[in-house]
Length: 128
Image 1 (spheres, rainbow, N blue to C red):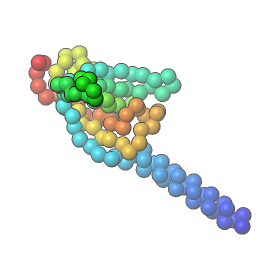
Image 2 (image 1 turned 120 degrees about the vertical axis):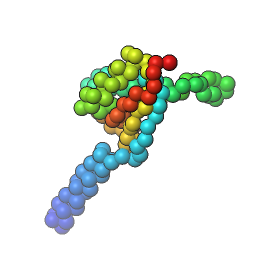
Image 3 (image 1 turned 90 degrees about the vertical axis):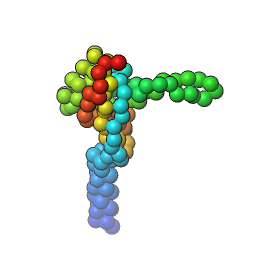
């Protein structure tokens, strides 16, 4: 009986580790969005993450006659130095960009505030 409990416990731990590693590493989708980078920040109390917002342009109608801007929130992985440099330049010079991203299945608080992680920044045009 003791052996069955130990084996069952080990199998459960292995399944939990496998599930976590799949949720952490696999992508739900990938794609791109275009617009102007409105904000880039480095925030967090213990786990510092890079967060940004992309303004896609135009305004969208909200509920009950409210009007809201078309902002998209994204995160940047810690090791993406070139992406961060490109985003900072895009914010400073205010030119339109195409952001290529990967969407994860789950967001983890130590990784970023969103499930969308930008991995490439392309300049798409001149300053408006």
